[in-house]
Length: 130
Image (cartoon, rainbow, N blue to C red):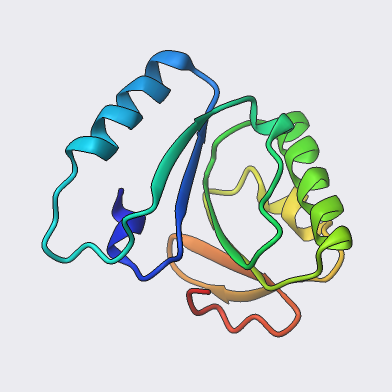
């Protein structure tokens, strides 16, 4: 829900666990904020390895969501999506587990390294919200 405080076109959360998804849906409906800038927020109950990335610019936020095997599959899906629909992508990664997988993506480069995050993006990405 924190992402809804930024001027994104939409925010999508992907959750495999039905109970956690249901909690997320309730939280989305209950969330009220005077500073909210994005009102198109949804939770999708799906295995992340089966998620189809929308063919538009995106900021992806990963906080050590899964291990290497699943990360490889999710990021392969992202790479396939980028090949089919080239576009600007920014990946904000908190933690170190996904970094080796992210670094293997063709056309993705490190944009910025902070104390907690590494921000990657496609060519032309400046690291600003898209």
